[in-house]
Image 1 (cartoon, rainbow, N blue to C red):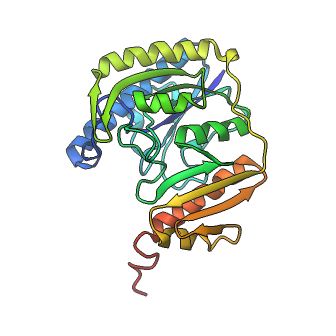
Image 2 (image 1 turned 90 degrees about the vertical axis):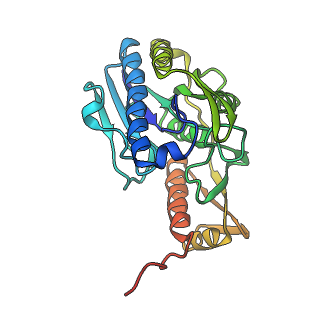
Length: 281
């Protein structure tokens, strides 16, 4: 049995504010905690019957997990030049996908450090008219590979959001969201214990889960935070600008659509302060 783990950091036990992830000393502390939560998922997956586990580091520059601290039974996808973003490495050979340390979508609730892919540029993401966060979108893409989403962990508001789409997913709440920048936290050791237990349970009953499959074509709508971001994504000829900050495009299959979406987000991030603002030549 082969399991893919998508790992983020905002949803881990202990994290309550952005400053904890940006201040040098604090960041080192929380990347260690992130790795420990990932290791708890790996341990649970192997206990549940997994024979191979691949982890994709999915936060920021996607190079947070130190390979020397990772459970040696797992493999790590690290580094930021990726076509498939948080899903780099996922394909039809996997039996399940698990999400650890993920967070709520931009503006969806009081989820801790809520955002969608890139807080600097994305206000809202829709697939075929439905507003989605990162986990729901990634689960739909995994469904395109025939891979079911079986496990999530994060704060209570995030779990509630995801369960609107993935009703039966195994879930662990590691903190209670008070506000976007405040939370009531479980001790990390308690969180690891719960994650191990529920990850094992999810993998051991994997046959009960079905991929989140949708019929194409797939129309993405993205609302950006600034009109300059939407404007520059129209350098892609398939992108239609439907309002000052909102774009739309359609692809026949979800994998192509996801790559297209990620390309638009990359362009939008670059355009935030002008695409050639720092170029001298």
